[in-house]
Image 1 (cartoon, one colour):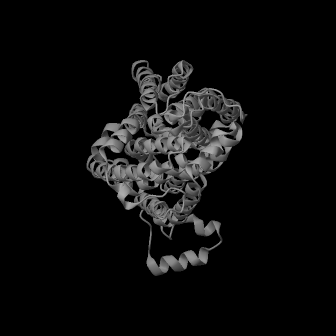
Image 2: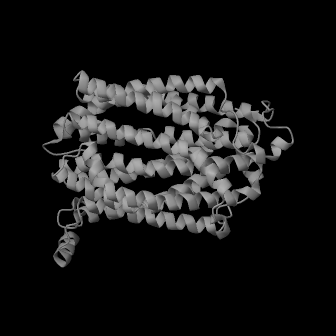
Image 3: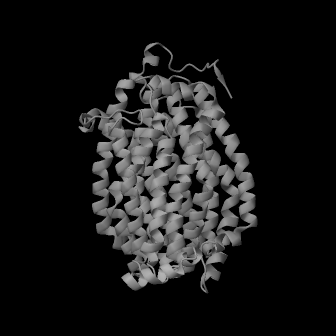
Amino acid sequence: MTGTADDQSGRFTRGSIVRSLLVLAGPLTATQLLQVAYNLTDTFWVGRLGADAVSALSFSWPLIFLLISVGGGMTNAGTILVSQHVGAGNDDRLGHVAGQTIAFVGVLSIVVSVLGVAVTPQLLRIVGAPAGTAIHDLAVTYTRIVVLGMPFTFGFYVFMALLRGWGDARTPMYLMVLSVGLNIALDPFFVLGFADNPLFGWLGLGGVQESLFSATGFTGFGVAGAAVATVFSRAIAAAVGLWLLFGGRVGLHIALADLRPTAETVTKIVRIGGPGAIDQSTESIATIVMTALVATVGTDAVAAYGIGNRFVSLVWLPTVAMGMSVETVVGQNLGGGNRDRARRTVYVAIAILAAAFVVAGALTVWYARPIVGLFITGPQAGPIVDHGAAFLRIVAPTWAIMASYHMMNGAFYGSGSTRMAMGIGVTTLWGVRAVVAALLVLAFSFGAAGAWYAIAVSNCTAAVAGAVFFFRGRWLEGVVAGDSPAETNGQVGTDGDPETTD
């Protein structure tokens, strides 16, 4: 994508709000779908190894997400700053802000990787992975390999965040296609090798399978193979993304000098990104707490929780993508002084998603058991399917409510009101979820269903709190107003937008 910041701001600060959202949400949904494909692919092929392997991944993912969330919150600062500078027409600030974000997140990723590898066994025991068992050992192996590749993961995430703030959602989508394609191609062989790999039979290549195994004797790396395939594919995507950024091939122009830290910009990145990192980390911690609570019921419940979350993350993709779209459109409009359009962007997004998730929730409740059955096979699958079906039937009816909260949260992030978003998330969403789950599971002996009900309750409390702060309107202030030409011209805070149509 090429053009100036003024060209970019015009795409999302004028014209149809629906079109502005969908132009971003379409590629972002595809990108998020591909991101989920990493986990679904790992789950599918690791599932061929048995219930212990699936349970190991269920214990690993909360820790991995916890570490990723630290960098994810900081990359959000890049999205916010770039989008508002684009809306304000501050072309000269874009390369500097992008470079500073890359440098800071790069250093942070190395620190997170080193610490993560060191504490993985202890954290897995805290989560509830039974020490001294095959599940714990497999979880340690998988987690450590993925964490060692964290700099590649952070590198790709910061690329996506900067391009999203700029208004380009297509280029990250193309790179994700490349990365996921590599992961899908490598996973079956890295996990299962050649001898017991059903892929050859599905493709009618039994003769090739026998020849390859006879020549190599390769039986795969098991759970470790899934982790290696994921890290390798993400490394390729990160390398290509940085090459595009520094080559000026995607609109943003970053020089090596932009990587030299400046106290003012790094402080702003931390001030904006820090609350987001805490918010996302709290989400991961809440997931860890939930996993530990579910583990008191049994490993079957943990496996079901992992499978249920994987399915929810798949269905939830339009919400994640639309929330990111709201973040960009709100950021650019507030940067340009269009407060009324920023507010109406959220209303439009809520209307679209609430209607869609009423239908999606009903279908999920009806087909809960067949859905869970897609992710687990074998003689031990029955109890896992029972727990997973109950999870979906309890949580799915709250999806439309939760989608509304996410759109308001997207507006908070787009405006740079990350402390407000953090406060709501930490208390009324993740805090309520953990406390209610602990009470229902441990004190009132509801079993795994207590955790499922806690998720549903917290979805509703977060939506109510989000609505209260949204209608107060304090989020309608940008974070780059002081640098904005629009403010100099007395335009910031203008509610009128006669050129806008919905």
